Structures are given as C-alpha cells and as structure tokens.
Image 1 (cartoon, one colour):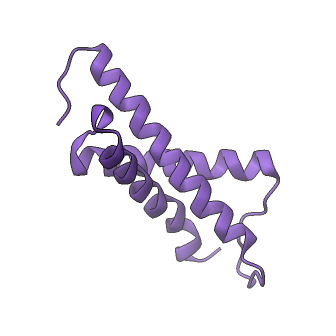
Image 2: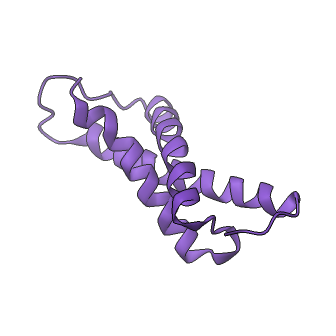
Length: 99
C-alpha cells in the first residue's frame, strides 16, 4: 500500500467536512474544526464503506478501473461530512456556539 492510498480517505474526508460545513451553516465548526472532524470521519467512513460494499483496499498493484480508489474517495468524503454533522449536533446539544 502506498502513501497516497493511505492519505486519500483523510484528505477527501477533510474536503467532505468543509463542504458540509459550508452548505449546512447550523453545523459549521469553522475551517479547522470541519477539517479535523472530516479527517477522523474520512478514515472511519472509508473503512466502513469499504467493508460494507466489499471493495478491496488498494494495494501496491495498479487498480486498472480505480474502483478501490473511488470507494476510498466517496467513503472518506461521506464519512467526513457525517462526522462534521455529528460534532456540530453535539456542540448544539451542549449549548456551545459554533465557530
């Protein structure tokens, strides 16, 4: 497994977290908060989606159709967005103002 395959879900999670934070202003945690929640959610979301759909994790071999990389990008982005919403909801429940 190469470095890009390891980091891809985290970066797509950060992008998903910032996208959700920008669209859903009620759950916006600020750019740093969205990125951090997205990083965590991206890693977890990529693993969960990959296991649920039975998608293989990319290895050192080249994946000709890119299904594994696409799964990591989609899982990371979705996981990052969901984690941003969850953290935003927790902040609202605790009465802390969003950034």
